[in-house]
Image (cartoon, rainbow, N blue to C red; front, side):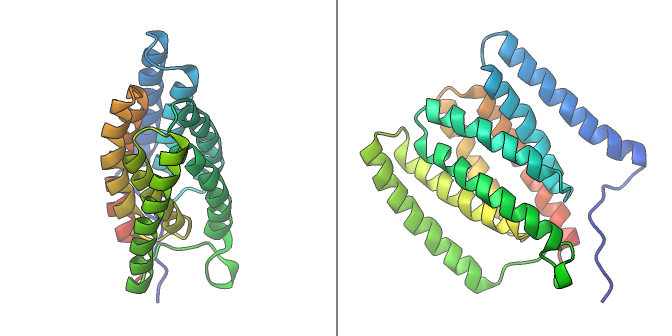
Length: 223
């Protein structure tokens, strides 16, 4: 079987350079505008830029998403803690660990310690993940109720979905994008209700990038 090449956008090399450059410029401009007008803190602006670029690198299967992701989850964890979104804050700690695991697996998780290729999850694994999301949501809802967290059910649900998505992403499983899309659809209104408008916009960008990632990884998936 011939190896499936990493996904590349069609078009000239200039286009492949202009797209990430445009993304960085646009996110920096939005973040600066929100910060300079007092609608976002410097940390929120930093999370906005680093998060958008990080997800773009994941879509491109670029290994540099991991060091940038470690920075992003550290910033995001502190922001969510300040807004009493405790499950989301704790989730960033788990993300940090999963990013380290994913970094290793992407480099050496393939056959004979080669780079990992995009694959698909078996039905049994997807069934286990569905059970995990259900049980985790119930447990986190109870925990957040005791801790006095805000938006307890939605915080618990999005956290559980995101944990499952991150686990699949760390192992380069195509189905991670289905879960990211679902999580992002829920995150946007959740953060709007908490008046985290820049973070809500970031997750809208995540949603668009997740759709792109689904199509990109589908082309690269090993069947």
